[in-house]
Amino acid sequence: MTQERRAAITGSGVFTPSEVITNDELVVAFNAYADRQNALHAEAIAAGERAPVPQSSAEFIKSASGIEQRFVLDKAGTLDPDRMFPRLADRPDDAPSQMAEMAVTACTEALAKAGVAAGEIDAVICAASNHERAYPAIAIEIQELLGTGGFAFDMNVACSSATFGIQAATDMIRSGSIDRAIVVNPEICSAHLEWRDRDCHFIFGDVCTAVVLEAEDLAKGDRFVIRSTRCATQFSNNIRNNDGFLRRTRDAMDDRRDMQFVQNGRKVFKEVLPMVSKHIADHMADEGVGADDLKRLWLHQANKSMNDFIGKKVLGRVPDPAEQPNILQDYANTSSAGSIIAFAKYSEDLAPGDTGLICSFGAGYSVGSVLVTRA
Image (cartoon, rainbow, N blue to C red; front, side, top):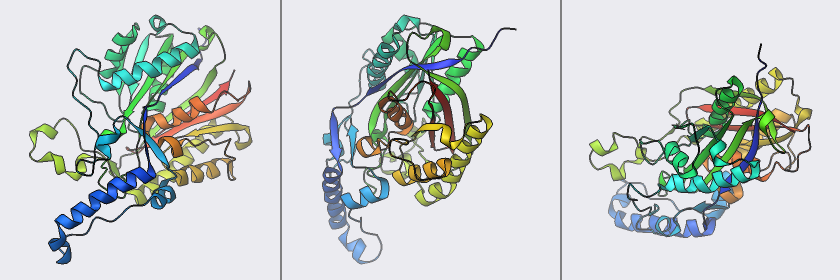
């Protein structure tokens, strides 16, 4: 009987946009928008027919989320009080898409770290929370631009897309159907955030991450062997975005609030935190990994309070910052890419034999976890 092959993460890459919006800059733009809206609707507000748009503050954003800034593809459009969303120009069909362009940069870095040529890759999985078109798949475009072989496909499990993509690639390698894969996560979160809503206008940023996975026997250098993966979903409407292919068949869609990111934050906190904490604890228990065995938690970067809660539940104590690194303060919530940014930036210091866990969670509800050991 042929022994099952083990998969390993051998390289990672991060594309970071050049433009940054700080909390202070964002608040100035949002409050200018709020002032204009309140002046425009002053009579209706005075009559009690319309609620005024409340002011935001940098202190509120930091307290609510732990975010201090975010990287974006277009700063000017997002900070324009008359616009409040990015200007991302349509590209001709013969030009690379925005997502594919971001992906090539992240993938090239990951391939270089793995010491793998693009032509050695058998599968490209583009796993992200929003894709800029229905078809052809962004993944196939990335495959063409990189010059990889095999096949490619898109995947969407919202903020859990990266870990679900890693599980899919791992299973293919274990089965012997492929030798190597890239899982890439181009997230243009600024395009679907409702920047005019005080409760969420600060949440998201743009970025792209990528990881190379190989059969362990093919790995050329340091690697993180994937010990086990686990995914779970449970339907909920508490995180939703209705911007789909039906949008263009309706009228006056530009002001439909539900066509952008919508979240019932209190319910998400109440329902997602126990789900994720139990998911991780059960995964570790089934693999014989105790809290003291876990050297690093690379969690989804949605909210600092959420991560602090999960880390305390999993470890049974308040995690040391080095044990549970946050990149949220610099990148904001980057959907599926968040846990991979944390992994890419805070993994090289682990020693051979050290065990860590990558976990992402979000709309669906969905949660995915990947147990790895440094080799």
